[in-house]
Image (cartoon, rainbow, N blue to C red; front, top):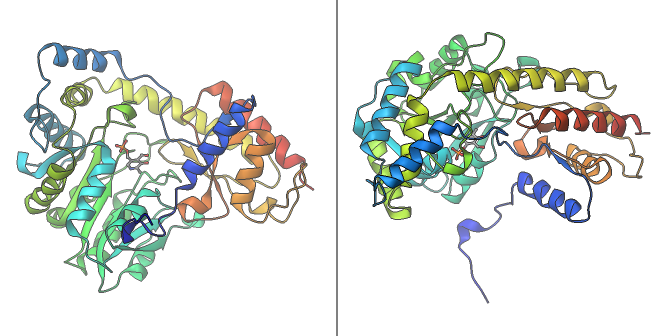
Length: 400
Ligand code: PLP
């Protein structure tokens, strides 16, 4: 009998992966599948960033790096936090990881004991509860309702807190809803957090530059400086600079927690690819107009998608304030039957039937903890987005 660790038991495969697998299978049958399932920018990495990596490799930056990041990248990260977030971090308060995802892994592994609760506003990026569970953590959800623009309300957070709470996760702009927490929202959230002085705070700000219509994203550690000493501010280059494959993320936080996270990472990876770190430093120190151009493109596409979906009877769609997803509601389609004869009971049924009958891959809201919705990625070419909306409209039109 082969045996696996108890910590792996009951860990579900994320629905994002399941939808991608089904989409690949249909493609292999020759179907023209449009995938809006993945959160990956369709832009190329900026040429100057690729050139910086090339130069770093030629210059011999090809040996083991310090576990927590090269001095050059850590200095660029410190400048970024100071310039863009009003946060000052010393070198021993910063670490670089294999993507923002490893920051979360390091932080939870370094702090969670069995039964510790991790409060996650829902809907949420699937990795927070999954990583928490790997280390014995128990996810507890604070619902963010569509009526509130999917923003986190202080009352919802307060209701989720218990004496066992070890972490509170904040992710604004949010994946999957695009909701942003502005300064006033964060002040209210900070008031709740002050009542729990032993709780760590993870602020995942990876979509911070993708905000629209004058909405302003803010960092909790800057809005509430008294919380900075227990906050990990997470960011990275994947989304802002179209660098998902380079695997560079980073964090600022208190010295003792960063040291514990460095201990985890030293055993896991011995540090991050030096060439990718040189590229990330060039991205952070490079011109800001690239990020602005991408944000404008996502904003335009989001409007196009929201307008197209709102015109479909049976669908609703809030206008996202940030990130690059749309999160339409499908409540009006449940209980009905597709042209192919499938009765739709849940958003998962909807997403599977939409893929199988209309060949559009999305992810059901159930994967993110708030149903019945679908998540569509707008980090997709205009032509594909338009065609996907046409197919979705036809699919819903054909319901009976
Ligand atoms: N945080 C959020 C909310 C995300 O959506 C993602 C990626 O999908 C990440 C963090 C991690 O990105 P990376 O590990 O590529 O830096």
